[in-house]
Structures are given as structure tokens and as C-alpha cells.
Image 1 (cartoon, one colour):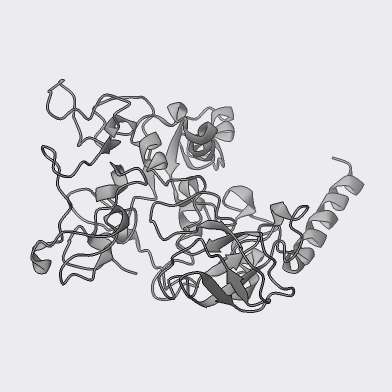
Image 2: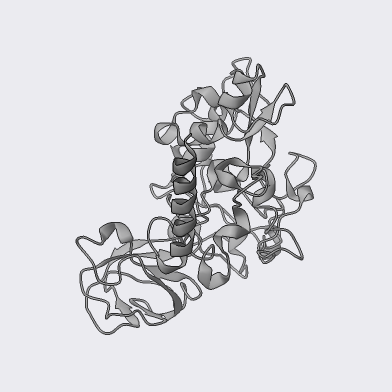
Length: 374
């Protein structure tokens, strides 16, 4: 590359970094990975000697861990330690973030996993990440599948944090019913109040989250486009926020950023779970537990829970709550004296059983009598 072109590209990159603090659009990160929370670009990225993809200071499995480690990390309020990675039936409270994907398909895979090459969900979004993160057999300092193969190695994909998460933007919908709704304002008041008369929120349900106006709608909805402000409280139909520069108009699309978890693609119906753990899905034919096929079988998923039918009943709280019936939309409420929502069996929006009805991804101790935290 000619010297003048090389230095020109460096200059453009440096100028871009200086401009980042002044924009809230596509190149900036959404809260809490943002300037207001003292998370800067150079917390993760570096100009030289980058170890991970995207010019990051650490390899992927250590990049998130460098902040989310208790008790010293920047994100110690949401800590992860190496011992938190699950070993099914033995220990751990979180999905493994340094586990290898199989190189070939096998219905008898211990965890129902299929090979990364055959992942299909969302146009192969997870597959596209698995070619970036993994290990190479020739022990050369390779940074991707292409680089590894070009050096004569065998690439083994690794299910790291960034396969499922995108730390810059919340791109997918989450499983929990109280996460990140999209709505439209129904009346204008001022720059600190959003009204949506179609909602029926719990009081202060969204306190501590963020009200956001997507920059992608700027050409149609320019007011406050690309900006976000923290929510200080809410009623059933209105939010109170730290003030925007302009009044919040009527008829505006908005997002609430809370419990979204920076998912790379939607997992509202356990789609990401199904794509990797294919041999635990009805599509693969491995869930008909009443008929032995010679392969490992799983509890049925993607089936409707019809209360009163054979083998179906309303999910119950643990014995510490006297086996009271769970209540509320999708059984997300509680029953009896129990006030622990983390032990509830949540159905999808169509009243169907999914992987996440019984399982959770992080901070889950498999003890229904305790609260999963943080």
C-alpha cells in the first residue's frame, strides 16, 4: 500500500474516534456501554497489537470478562467468573462462553449441538460469528477461520460471548416479557414526559432503564433522533425521563432499553437456542420422548401448554411457596406467598413451551427456592 494512502487511512480512523463522543448514531454504543457510563472506545479497542477481532485488546472470551469480573471490573455489578461456566450436572450458573462447537453433525451429541457450518437462523448470523472466534490446530496466531485454514490448520469454532451478544447495540428481542418494548407516543406534553395510552405498565417498572429514539428513523422522525435518556419513573401509561433537548412529540416510535442484553439477533422464542441445540428441537425429530428411536430424546418444545389436558397443568411454585399456582401473563407473575419471579416457568407469546421455559442463560442455580441474581 502506498505510504500516503496508508497514513490517510490512519488519519481518517483517528478523526473518526475523536468524533465518536459527539454522535449517538450508528457508531456509538447504547447504554450502559456508552460515554455517559464512562465506557469509551479505547476500553476495548486498540490501535496496535490487537489480540482479538475488530482490533480489540483481548481475545473475545476475555474481552467481556475483562470488565465483567467480580469484584474489580468496570461491570462488576454483573459479574462472571470462570467457575460460573456451566458443567451440566456438576456446577456453574451460566451458559459456557468458551465451549467448542462440534465439527460434524451427530444427533447423539451430548448437548444436542449441531455443527457451526449448518446453523441457519437469521441468515446464519450465529454462524458468521463462529468463523471469527475459535481455536486453530496448528497453534499459529490465527485470528479467524480463513486465516487458520490458509495456514494449514483445522478451525474449531468456539461459542464465545460475541456469538450471541453485540456490545454496541441491542439488535434482537429478548425472552422475558418485561424487556424492551417498541411503542408509539399517543400525546405530546414536554421534554421529560412520554405518554402511551395503549400501555398498562407496572409502576416504576422501567425505572433505571433508558428511553431511546432510533437514529434510523431520523428522516421521518427527526426530533431527538438517535438520543436516549434515563428513565426516572413510570406510571401505567407514561414515562418520566431526564430531559431531552426537544419536547417529545405525539406519534413517535420509541424503544425502552432495559433487560435487552445486547442480543445479536432475536431470541424471543428461543431461536438462538434452537439453532445451536438443534437436536433438542421438534424440527430434528428428537423430542418425541414417548417413542424410543435409539437416539437421545428431549422434552417436547414448541408445543402448546393446554391447562387441564393430559400431562398439562398450570406451573407451580416450589414447596417453599406451598406449591401455589403461578399467575400472570405467560405465568410471569407469582402465586401464593412466593415473591421470586426468577423461578417461574415462562411460556412464549403463543402459550408454547420453549427451551427458556425451564432454562435460563446466566445466573441460574437450578434451585427453585432461591432468587437468581444479580
